[in-house]
Image (cartoon, rainbow, N blue to C red; front, side, top):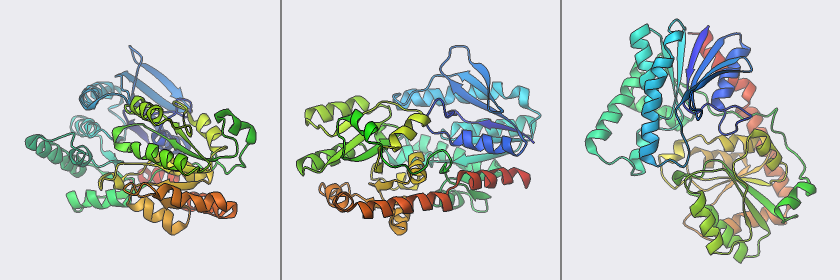
Length: 392
C-alpha cells in the first residue's frame, strides 16, 4: 500500500526526541509498504529527505518546546494548512495515518478524505482537548464546545482510531460509542536498549561515582511537574542519601528549574541538556532508575510517556510520581515504586531499600526488562500496527 503519515513532531533516532512515528513508519516499510511522512522542520524553505526507506517531507513550520500556549497553537494551525497543501501530490495514496497531538492534524485527515476520498486512521496519544481544558489553558466555554465537537467528528470520520493506552481507548469509546478503536501502546526497543552493568568510567563525568543515579529524560514542560523532582533532590540531600539526579532534556521550565537548584544549593542535580537516542543509551549505562513525572492530574494519568518504555527496555527501576495505569502496572510487575508528591519524605523512604540492598534493585530491574520484552516489544507491536493495514 501507499500510506501517508502526517505527524507534526516526527523525529529520527539521530535527531532524538520521541520516535514512535519513526518506529511505526519503519514497521510499514519492513512489510513492503511505501510510506511518506509530512512533518515540520526548522529550515526556512522546507526539504525532502529519505530516512531508511521512509520519504520525509519537512515543512518550514518552526516549533519548540519552549513555546507558550499561544505560540504552540499558531504553529499547530500553520502546520495543518501547510500539510493539506503538501499532501496534494499524494492524493492517490491508499491511507492516511494522522498522529495527534495536536488535534488539528485530524482536520488534515478529514480534508483529505473529503477532497480525495482517502480513508484515515487517527492516533490518540493524549486526550485533546481534555488535557488543555483540565490544565486550565483553555477556559472559554464556546471554544471548549467547538473543540469537543471537532474531536468527536474526527473520531467518527476515521476508518479507525489507535489509542496508546487503555484509559484513552475507553475515553474515545465514551465519546463516540461504536467507534473502532485499536490499542497499540508505545514501544520498548529491546534490541537497541539492553540492560548494562554500570560503567565506573562513565559515572565519574558527573562527579558522583558510586551514587545511586536516577535519570529524568524528556520534555521539561509545565505538565511534567518537575518541581517535584527538585523537591526529591532536596529531601535526598538533607537525608544524606547518595543519589544523583540527571535531568536530560529541554523545554519551557528549564531556566526555572535551574534557578531552583541554584537557590537551594543542590549538589545532586545535573542538567545534561537535550540528548539523542544514542546519548540516551549512554546515559542508561550509568543509571539505576528512571523517573517518570507528571503533574498530579487525572487527565495526565491516561498518557503513555516514551521514556517509561526506554526505561523498561534498559532494565531500570521505574520511579513514578502520578497515579493511573503506569503506577498500577509497575507496582503489580514489581519493577517500580510510586512517590507521592504530597509527601516530601516519600522519595527517601521508597529509595532507601534499593540503595541498601543491591539484590532488591537487581530484581526490580530484571522485572522491568521482562515487562518490556513481554508486553511492549517493538517488533511485536510493529507487526500489530502493520497488520491494521493488511486487514483494511
